[in-house]
Amino acid sequence: MEPIIETERLILHEFTLADAQLLVDLNSNPEVVKYLHELPTTLEVAQQVLESVILPQYKLYNHGRWAVHLKSNHEFIGWCGLKYVKERNEVDLGYRFFQQHWGRGYATETAKASIGYGFNTLNMQHIMAMAHVDNIGSQKVILKCGMAFRKEDFVDNCPVKVYDLHKSNS
Ligand SMILES: CC(C)(COP(=O)(O)OP(=O)(O)OC[C@H]1O[C@@H](n2cnc3c(N)ncnc32)[C@H](O)[C@@H]1OP(=O)(O)O)[C@@H](O)C(=O)NCCC(=O)NCCS
Figure 1 (cartoon, rainbow, N blue to C red):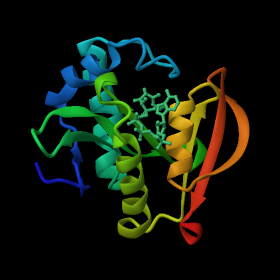
Figure 2 (cartoon, rainbow, N blue to C red; figure 1 turned 120 degrees about the vertical axis):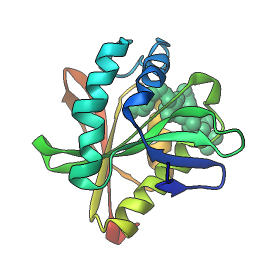
Figure 3 (tube, protein in one colour; figure 1 turned 90 degrees about the horizontal axis):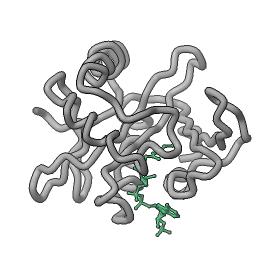
Figure 4 (cartoon, helix red, strand yellow; figure 1 turned 180 degrees about the vertical axis):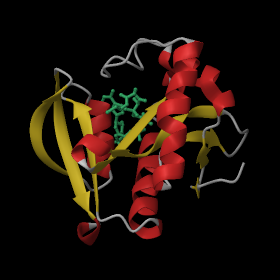
């Protein structure tokens, strides 16, 4: 599969339906879903999410959540990417990695590359991100990408911090 983005250590490409089990495995660790309003998922639900949410975004908007693989051995380590949220008419940055790969800068590396792709390749003007108020790791990633804190909010009954970045400030 053609990479969408290549960074120094990582390759980002589109998911396919065959990747459902990878998403099941990723969400199966309670630490990974601790700050998300998602639960560990079944293969059937992961297939539905791929079919109805993740894959259509690529066709409709030319972006979405991308699978992240190590360049060194092609291991799937998680996902990162941009998602158009219709209800808010906004593009949202997101990421999720297997716990054994945390703390190596992969989230920051892929998040920065995704933002750059959004602004420079897709000519987006504005990208936002949200993190649970207690999700310090994610907040650090967002700030390292140059995003600015805007407000605290409640989304799906979760207290979140909201950040954003305009292309003109990037
Ligand atoms: C949040 C997450 C993506 C961070 O991934 P990561 O690859 O470990 O992040 P990075 O290595 O790029 O770390 C960026 C910074 O955050 C810090 N950090 C990471 N996790 C942290 C934590 N739990 N507490 C405090 N700081 C943390 C890192 O030390 C680093 O800071 P530094 O550059 O000053 O050393 C990862 O923990 C994850 O997948 N969590 C589960 C899913 C999730 O919460 N996604 C975000 C939803 S909003």
